[in-house]
Image (cartoon, rainbow, N blue to C red; front, side, top):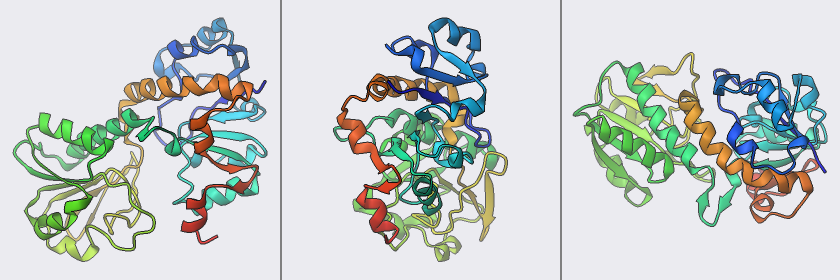
Length: 317
C-alpha cells in the first residue's frame, strides 16, 4: 500500500487544490492520505475535519516522505529536488518545458501527467479548461478597463477552453467569431477587424509558424487586446510571454497582451470541485498499485526514464 501526500501549491496566487472533503469521503484507503497543514483553509474545511475522516495532517516537509505526491501545479514546484525517487501526480507540461523534464530525470521521478489523462477522446479535466477560458476573459476585461459588450472578438481554436471563453463572451454581449484549425487562414486575412483576440489553441510543438506573427501586431486595431489563454511562449501568438497574476499584462506595438498561465485560480472553488471529481477516481488504484488504463497512458517518465515519445521528439533527445 502506498501513501499519497497532498501539497499546497507554492505557485504565486494558486488556490486550487487536488481534492475536496466530499470526494475524500469516497476513498477506501483514507488512512493512506497525508495533507499539508492548512490544506483546506481556502475551501472552508479544517485540519480537524480531515483527521475525523481518518486522514493524516502533517508539516510540509513530511509530505516529501510519501510515496506519491499530488499537487495540481506540481510541474512548477520548486521542491522537485526533495521528491527524489517519488511518484508525482499533477500538471507537468514536460513536453514544452525542458527544465522540468531534466529535473524529473535527475531525481529519478515517476510522473503521471494530468495533461495526458483522457477517457476516450475527452480530456478528463475538461471542465477546468472551460473555467480557464471563462476566467481569462473576465480577468483580462478588468485589466483592459473596458466592457466587451458590442466588441468584435475572435476566438482561435474550438476545444474546451474555447467553449468556456465563448460562453462568457456571449453573456458579456460581445460579437464572437470562432476560427478552428481549418479556417485559420480566414482569421489571418481579417485579424485587423477585431477588438479582442482570444487564443485557445493548444500549440503543436512541431509547428514552426505562428497564427499571429509579431509583425502582424502593426496590422491590428490600435489599443486592441490579445488574451492568450493557452500561454505557449512564442506559440500561436509569436509575441506571447506568459505573465502572472500580479503582473498580468504587457504592451507590445501598442497591443495589450494578457497571458496569465493559471487563470482557473480566479475561480478556484469551481476549479477544485471539477478537478477533485476526477482525481478521486484514481487514488485507490494508485495506493493499491492496481492497473488503470488512463493512468498507464498518462505515465510519461518512469524512475527517471522518459517513456513518452512526444517529449523525446520535441526536445531532440
